[in-house]
Length: 327
Image 1 (tube, helix red, strand yellow):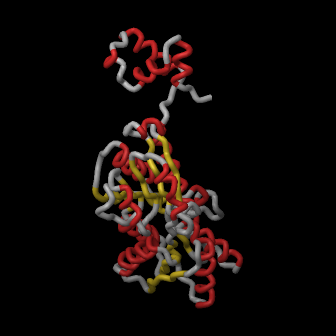
Image 2 (cartoon, one colour):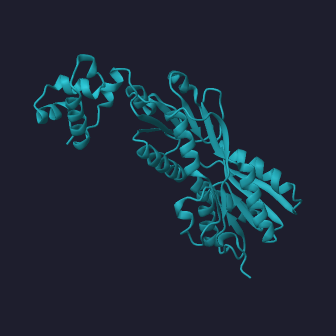
Image 3 (cartoon, one colour):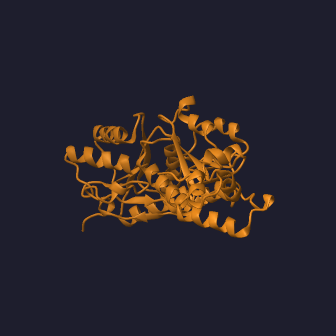
């Protein structure tokens, strides 16, 4: 049950207005005695009293609430980001107001809660996309976890794609690969990842390096679609570097259905290291982003005013069975 100022007043046998003045820091203005102030404050703490955010908003005070705009609730990587944001918010006694887009498309309905509630700042979870709506929130700081630095954002933080792809390349070269293909779907962040892949792998002068792009609407469908393309070509590469773990999972499944074994016949890597990557069969080699660092960086920028600009995060390649040749 939510504790109110009226409950505290009743316990102490004082007026609700007196409790209100104490808890708003205005007690000394009207000469309330020090011992009474302490009694009210101690009891409020004991009863776990939490001030109404709506009331604070009306008084022009901070709400200790951060809005989080998720660009794709169906992306399993974003659940890790939301979890880390919730963790740091709890540690700092902040609340999270979670809203999201449908298929990355803006609508009045999807952002309505941000206009209805008072938030101290906003964190965008997701790369690129339309951020024209941020102009409606010029008074508060906005940060992004993902690619897409913008002068309207106080801070943006994203994975260092060059470091990630270099790590994947070095690992696959150690497996003696000669032909490598990049698997992506038609998404902006995948296109960025593809460009870095081509730069890094082409520089190694392998026998064959190219990319395949699926127009399917999600990563699971894209993975199966891209494998069909490779099977029809009839010339399988030594390794398939996937833009996401979900594409890698779908690719492994479709290869298995076609009698192609991973890693015996082809090596596969993913990206993001979502929770299911480790327990898939075979377990998937993936690049793990520094989600905890990114969440903390974005949170403290909008909640505490600490930090601004763009930051690239170093991650780590988690090597598993899907990309290791059996000796």
